[in-house]
Image (cartoon, rainbow over all chains, first blue to last red; front, side):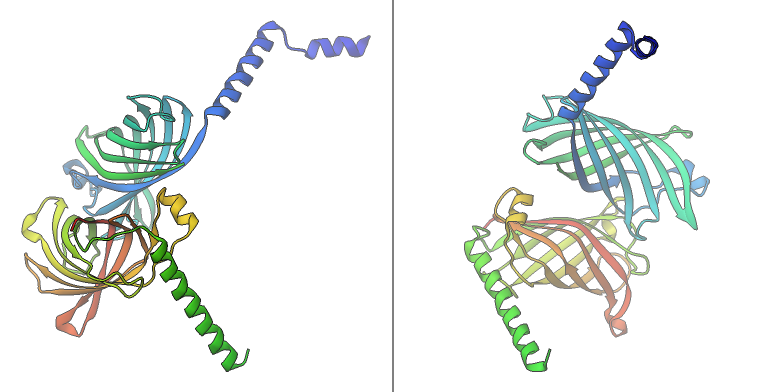
Length: 186
Length: 185
């Protein structure tokens, strides 16, 4: 009798059961929709030397940059991406940016549409390699990829001619970014 | 292993590799044309005398032979500093690539999503800056090259920049983020 009483105390009530059921359904749905991928591509800064940052000795160096990231598609209309942008020349890795983006497809489901247009909102954190990695400013990023060919179901996707705006937190400067091509592998 | 069997093993390996290259090319429906163009993005390291920045390159490509390996490709390339924009510091380049192999495998086809050849190459270049500074030479490797249809796609190709006026003294490095070549004729 005592054991039954204790067990009934441990059983969740109606709101608890509803919450548990909703969580399980959401987790199952997310697990079904979740697809993972890797990305690699080019990256250019339109104004590599920002006046505000140069005064503080924290300018972004002009150079050749590349971008690599990991993608998680969490719904048919939403994917998240964590990425790094690093300089390859004139000194490899001296400039490093870590960022995260939420991306929305505008022309249809990201899994099914072979051609799509993406809009991405994100945050970039600049790091500078000087003895160690030192934080060097943060940026809000808005990017548009006007042509994406492929999808996760196909296993490959190319994002072409992506352009973006960076808003530097603190100085309020706006600059542009440009990526000729980003390859995504799912 | 004694020297003679080791030499025989090496010879067998070389023959097997050559056969794989030949079989790969013969079985592949890749490039049938000779003349095309290329687009690329590249940068130069410190000490090379080339100003830091991203250079956008446009070139003409000629590949007269269909050999599966040691096939030469000749390019004439103009590279313009794009970020920051500074056409006065452009570079003219003459480049010779020597294809080392042509390997076809299911894994490469699956990665490319179409019939493709893995075709790494070595390269040698002569560079003439339009801005200040003398001519430069470069010796490079193109380790990540795929050939698909009438295109050649290479990424992350490094080169050592040399000073021809000083006994080919190494000055620094350059790296090509990507180069896409398309054969039209």
